[in-house]
Image (tube, rainbow, N blue to C red; front, side, top):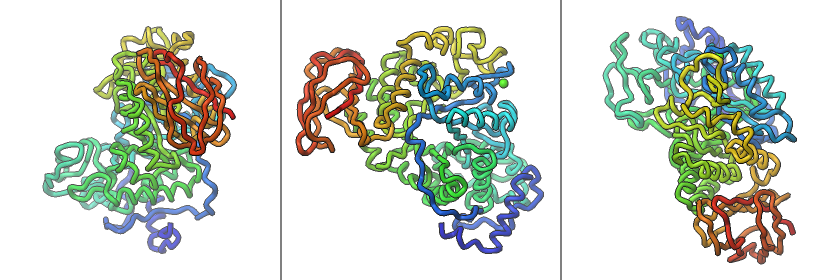
Length: 562
Ligand code: CA
């Protein structure tokens, strides 16, 4: 980044001031910066530039698990999940031994916000340099990092860049028009009455100073003013603090679309996209292996504009296409969705999921149909991209909006407190925790949990399934979902009957592929007899017959060998 290499002396001084201020940010009387808000390109502190090393894209080979700390595991009986609780649960996630099949086999954890916050969810931060005392101390968090590192698990944390809490000291100071923090937020003496992209009005009245401030989500979350270089520099420092001083492996970026606003244009504006590109250069200098995944919750075309600003982006359309393509069996809907993504992200740097903390849980989407939940998991855990599993999806936890009900405590066992806590849970568990819990499903080989374990372990075992090329086939049967995954070492044919019907007379065809000649098909997963498959010089074949009968919900992973 050219800007960083020619750092003016004045800017350096300013940055030192900002840096030294950041740790005493509870005392906003100290001037953070003599700079006034401008529209000049964002300036930021830079570590010593180092030669660009070969990137190690470790996130392509693992499955992540999203944890809402408050609801995952309580270690001390206060009814609130905590860092020590996660440590106790690590054997469940990954016992550190690739040979065992009793763990989930995940390779990464995304922790929803861990900073101090007045809300239960934490997306309104009051201190970016500390952890929420409900969850433990910074020492507890560092111990968690040590424990996950021992097992080869990576940890990323939610980074809430767009806004702070209205309880944050920066915002409290900013109500004073003479405070240097006044320009850290966006104030107006009159209500601009500009409609917001999320709410009808993004402007909120503040009784302290009789002014209006901008907050795109709600009044409790005032937006930071990224037109002020001091704000930008501060959030660079925050990123550096967690990567370098604390040692996390990266960030999940909340609400990435909204950093900059320009009148009525309040999402995805060029300044926002450019900011992320500068941020990426910055954090890659801090840690070249850091990983970021962005929440850009919109259509693929717009999401792709951020592909240079973060390592990966969540694929929201795909989640709907997979869930919908299983709900109403439709293989082509799913393959088209993946192909659309791969056209924008040929390097496969994108992240997949079925649900997250903002969405209805999968089993509720399917009205309790466990076979459909298993099929949706099969599809995305055999597909390209970095899969994320939202905690509890692997045991079929129910949940529909409001948000609290899709973030209920993890159901570990059928005992009082659900194995989540010895005390009173911060919010009640789902009433079905006696039937749906880890302890019960652990013992049932046909459970959703063991289905997830099997799929993640297969993915870990066969790199073709994680980072291999994705090539769909076509079928005369719409219920059939057929794809090839190829990584040079191995070619796998993945086939699923997405429906609850026994189907017959189905064939597969492909118009082009890198393969040629005759292949034997052996089953890695599923039982069935498959004839050899012959590709012509273009890598094509037509009307290859599947077994006479394909059972409801049947799936196969086949190894093709010449
Ligand atoms: Ca606790």
